[in-house]
Length: 293
Image 1: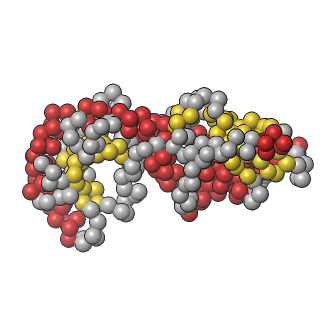
Image 2: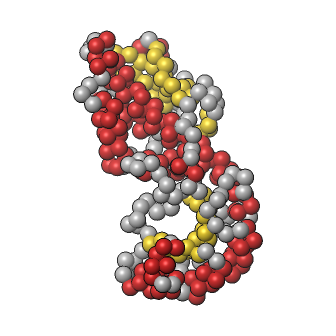
């Protein structure tokens, strides 16, 4: 069987740091079980197997996890990142030093499971809005310390990322507006800071939408608006600003939201409520694992 995995982007330093932290958390002073039972020179092989149907993400992250313990671990993927797979499908063959494979196993599978769960849920939302102009976005509701991984999983599921953090876009939310005294004053202060960044304003009412449009704001977030209010906001904007629907979006209503004509739909559930994808590592004799490639 020839591997069909597609090349993926280079993993960012943030992701490598997250992998290191995860390994340190799990290994601590050492894997006492593996080190007691497995000889230092032993080699082994195995397969990563999907135990459910869904969308795969994170095999390259799993490989990086193994490599941090042993540079000669081989991982041959049989599916591309973002591919739809079936239950019991073999995702990858892994071989190398037995101690490294057993010690890194849970951390590697945790990454694949979390990322594939996010990618699977993201694909469900993306498929629901197919044929509309709406783009599915994530939010900052990610696991602390795992944002780069969570957002990578969203991309591999077919969604797109909103801002990476508080530093790459100005998003004026309700508390900022209330503190400044008005939407107009909040926008004035943001522009006076002269950051050169895109400004998005949260609108709670159609009056807020009108005020933001009058100020020439580039993006407007429609916060918890009804379907009818969103339709009216789209008509008011008439293409002058990019509109983002946010709040109480579910798989049941996301199609209705998309059909209002908004440009973006942000869904916090993609990263805060995705169920982990069920994967396992099954040991195989070294020769069998090698022949799979």
